[in-house]
Image (cartoon, rainbow, N blue to C red; front, side):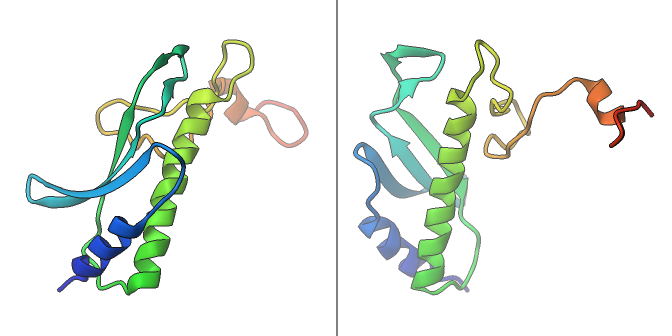
Length: 127
């Protein structure tokens, strides 16, 4: 049992930034939320327009309307979090750049650090 009919309603009524579009799509037997940003530009080449679609697997759940709204909200936050990682930089360094490779969750924040940093103790000495 699920409440995808409620989710369809929530998604059809969702509005966010100009250029953002929401849709539910079925692919390979699974339902996914597609969040499209038609006004996105390339973080690595800001002169270039690069419309993007972000796909989020829909959980099989019996959520009510408020909970589905909250779920859509959280997926928007994940997209924004991803974009912060793409854009935030110090010089050419992007320490929070998303991992896009196979098997990675591009919405999880990672910070790229030197492996030695993990061996430094609170007092500054090395383990």
